[in-house]
Length: 343
Image (tube, rainbow, N blue to C red):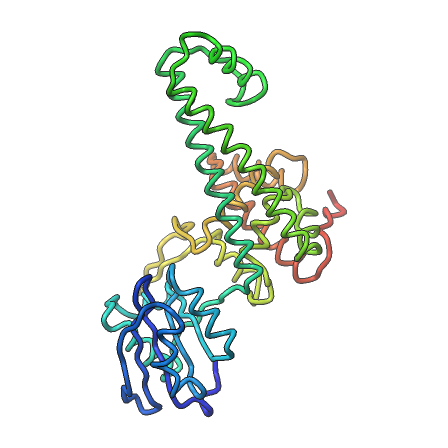
C-alpha cells in the first residue's frame, strides 16, 4: 500500500464542495492538528506543509475530490483515495468523524484504496458521460413525442419511431395547421439532441483512436462491439492489468451473480441491481443485444439462454458475462478475437 517505515504522519481529508476537514496523526495515533479550510490547495497546503514530506494522505472519493487529488499528486505527495463502497461497509457515516477515521485507517494500514484513473482516462470518462446524458435525454424526448401523438389521436405508420418512413409521416403532420406548439418544441429538441449526440460521438471516437488505437481496434473484433461501445469499454476497463482475473472484471462490471451466506443458508445468486459502473454494464448489455441477433456462437448462446429462461434480460446478462471473458483475453493478450474454428 505505502512505505510505513518512511511515513511519520497520516493525514485524513474529508472533502466537500465548499470546505475540507483535515486531521494529522503521528505513528502512535496522537492527533497533532485538525481543522477546516476551503477546498482549495493554496488554502490547505499551509496547514499541512510541516507534515507533507513524510506523510501519506487519505481522502474519500466524492464529487469534489479530483482537483485536490491531482494537485497533491503533481506535487509528488503520497495520496490515496478510499474505496467508498468498501469504506461504508466498514464504518457508519458521520461527517464530523470522517477525517479522523481516514487518518486512523491510514495509520493502521486498513484504508481500502480505490483505483483513480489518469487524466487521459478521466477525460474519456467525462466525454462518455456527456454522450450518455445526451442519449438518455434523446430517449426521453422520443417517448414524450410518441406519448403526445397517442394522446392526440395522431395515427403513425407501424415502423419503428424515428425511422425514415415514420419521421416522414411526422413531418407531414407537423406541416398541417393541426400541429401543436408543444410538439414542435419537442421535435426541435429531439433534432438538437441528435446533432449534439453525433458531434460528441465524433469527438469521443477521435480522442480514443488517438490514445488507445490498438485497444480500440481489438475490442471491435468482438461480435457486438461497434465504435461507440468500444469507447465505453476503454473508459471503464483500462488499464486491464488492474484486474487480477476475468472474474474480478465480471464483478466490477456487475454482470456476475452475488451469493449471500448466513450460517448454513445460502441465498440464490442474483445480479445486483446497482453497479459501481452502470455505464459499463449498459455498454455490455447493448453489445449482447446486438450479438444476440447474429448467427455466431454468442448469438446462439443468447437464443439458447432466452429459450431456457424465457427472459431476454437474463439472456443478455449471461452473454454480457461471457463477453467480459472475451474482452479480458483480447485486452491481456493483445490479440483480436477469433471465432472458434468449430463454428
